Amino acid sequence: MTTEFRKVTVLGTGVLGSQIAFQTAFHGFDVTAYDIDDAALTAARQRLEGLATVYQQEVEGADADNTATTASGITLTDDLAAAAAEADLIIEAVPEVLAIKRDLYRKLGELAPERTVFATNSSTLLPSDLVDYTGRADRFLALHFANRVWKFNTAEVMGTTRTDPAVFGAVVDFAEAIGMVPIELHKEKAGYVLNSLLVPFLNSGIALAAGGYAEPAAVDETWRIATGSPMGPFQILDIVGLTTPYNILANADGEGKKLAAWLKDNYIDKGKLGVASGEGFYKYST
Ligand code: NAD
Image (cartoon, rainbow, N blue to C red):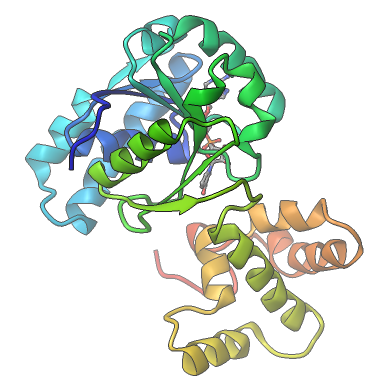
């Protein structure tokens, strides 16, 4: 797969940023990752080393050598100007806070070369919420990954009405070149394809259990047997972790708040946060 991008910069080295950086470097691109300070960069180095181990276990063709080279080959910096200076493509994965993202794009628009394409990995914001701060409406769009990018390898590509179709196409090609399956959206949609389906599905599962209609395990079993899907909503919730769905529901109106309260009383307040905490709707051995 050919792509016009060679030098890729990732902004934010948290959960998703570190994965995007690693996946991109693993596929042979020249990757720089930016975060705000030394502490964040130390955490980034640890995340990248952790990913090297995970790739060896879960990614075909990954071994101790090539994952170590991948991790050490990623340039880490807290200098935004240096991170932007030579980038062909900048993928932004900083916190899901509008003010932080706008402020960053405002600075980046001035620091990056005119030719540089910017892509946001935002899950809940639309690219139109940010485009006016980028200084390059034609070269800005969303490229949305799913957590555990090496395995759940969709990359949703979604522009604004002002995105140049050639830029859109180049980002689709890039996604393929790093081992993703690009999913093209023709127009902006909050939640893209995945969360437009998943969020109502998960909420319906929670409503069945919270309303006393059926146990979580029975809801999951129904879904698995009757549709042939490998996982029901509560198995998925355990993997996602209960905190994010809780926060979304707690900020919703009426019914959402009731579901949030049920999650809090029965699970979150008891430390049952999902797979990562060893227990959610199910128990996990560590
Ligand atoms: P995170 O909190 O794990 O990481 C955010 C990183 O950004 C941290 O390392 C933080 O130090 C850094 N940061 C903070 N302020 C910054 C700034 N001004 N400039 C640069 N870096 C800054 O967050 P995350 O879960 O990786 O989410 C990042 C983005 O990815 C969000 O937009 C989110 O919607 C999106 N996303 C997350 C997931 C997920 O499952 N976590 C999935 C898809 C998309």
